[in-house]
Length: 281
Ligand SMILES: [Zn+2]
Image (cartoon, rainbow, N blue to C red; front, top):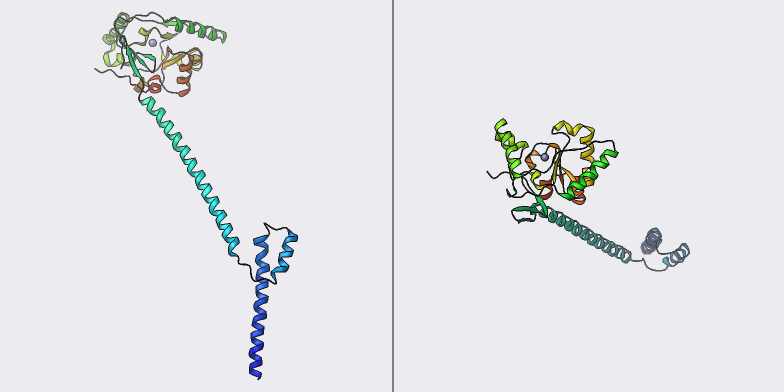
């Protein structure tokens, strides 16, 4: 008899402890899982009923949370994908513009070469012997405007050399060759038919010395020429690309839009257009 009582007492004790334990767990877990969706009053009601109902399966809430997280993750991934698509597109655009630069539109009319519509005379592209347009009127007007602006800033600019015919360039170039050899002459003087001066769009200003670049006139020219449509055609450090030594005095007319674009790019004209300047013999 005593043994049976003990067994029954033990079973009852276990059951009571089990129920007590359930309630405690529930109370502990409830606030965390419900506080977000229930007000304090609602929570109190729920707490009261919890004692009388079986343990709430925590899975649904977890499932919801898990599903929400999965959705969020999917959305984030979608956004990431969109982001990388945009990046790809941007890269493609950049590659396109790189491609454009590497594949410039080169056309020839009456023996004169135009690259993306810009008349080019350099070591790679020559002008016909008969091409003799004189000084370009638009370029000259722009030059005079630049001179007035310079003058207003206390800067004196003047032309040393403008248009040069094929024959004049012939004499000039071979004069240098006989004096210092062809290899040397090729660094600073164009062969006849290859001079930018034959286009009527180029001018040498003030002084044919590289030190001109350090004078206030040279500095003003470098900083302002593009505003009047000119570029310093043979910039410092670009000899391997332009084919000519640094000439801070030599300006080329391109019009303000292109000149400004070239100026802002920091490139020389050959780099800007994606062309070479190399003699083929
Ligand atoms: Zn020049």
